[in-house]
Image 1 (tube, rainbow, N blue to C red):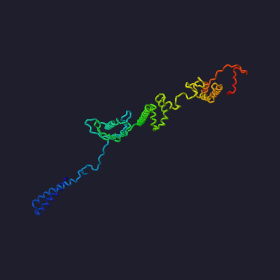
Image 2 (cartoon, one colour):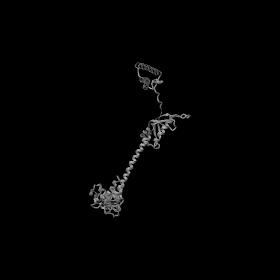
Image 3 (spheres, one colour):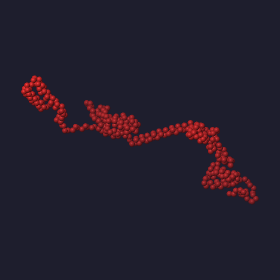
Image 4 (cartoon, rainbow, N blue to C red):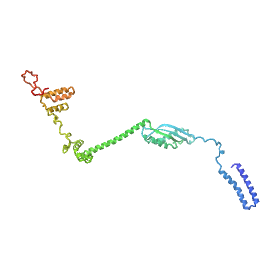
Length: 370
C-alpha cells in the first residue's frame, strides 16, 4: 500500500469517528452502542484495504521497467547432417542417414576446456542411431526410419555431460546399387524356394509312382482302376501296357503270364521284317548283312513282283537302280550293290553263231529284256 492510500485511510477514519461521536452525544447512546461504534470504526478501513488489494494486478505495467519490449527469441543450436553411413545387419550394406541435430549446452565444470558442442551433439545422436540400425535388415529401411524418428526425438545427455542432443526429420535410405543388388538377391531366393518346392514335389511323385504305383503290375492295375472310376473293362484292356511299363520301370522282363496281353507291336517276339532273320541275315540272300533303306525297299520290290534272287534279271535290275541312285545317294546305291552281288562268270564253249568268249549269250526265250 502506497503513502497516498495510507493518508486517505487515516482521514476517512477520523471523519467517521467524528460523525459517530456527534451522533452518540445527540442521541444519548448507551455504553454498549459506543463500544459497537468504536469496533466498526476500526474494522471498516481494514476490510476496505483488503478488498482493494485482492483486485489489484500484482504484475501491473507500472512494475515493469520496459513493458512494451517483446520476449527475446530462444536461440536454436542445430546442425544438418546428410547421408551419413551407419551399419545394418548385413555386412557391406550400410544405411545412409540424414537428419537435423538439435542440442543445448549444459553447465561446464570449473576449469574444463572449451568443446565443439555441435560435434558432441552429432556424435551422441549417431551413436544412438547405430545401436538401432546395426540389428536391422537393410531391406527394412522405411520401417527403421520411423523407429529412429521416435527414438531420437527426446533430448539425451551425451557421454561427456556437456550437451543434450536430439534429432529431427530423420531419413534413411540405401545406395541405389545396394538396393538393386538386394532386389536381385530377393528374387533369386524366391525363385530358388519355388524350384526347391517343385523339385521335392517331383521327387515325391517319382517315388510314389516308382515305389508304390508301378512296383508291380498288380499295384499299377489297382491304381489305374481307381483313376478310371472303377471301370473294370477299361482297366483290363490296359493290363498289357501296364505290364510293359512296370517291366521298364523295374528293369526286368515282362512276366510270362502277362506276355500274351502285351500288344503285338510292343512284344519282342523277333524281327518284324519277314525278310530279316533272328540273326540279322536275309533269307532272300543268305549271308548278306541286314538290309535297311534302299536295299530293304529293293528286296520288298523283288518279293512283290515274284522274282527269284537267282534270276539274271535281278542283277541287271540292281545295276540299273544303283547306277541311277549314284546321282542322288551313293550310300544307298553301294548298299544295293553289296546285297545283290553279280555272280562270277563261268567258262562257256564257243557258240555256233560264232560269238567270241567275251560275248554274252542271248537271253532265253520268254525271259525279261532290259
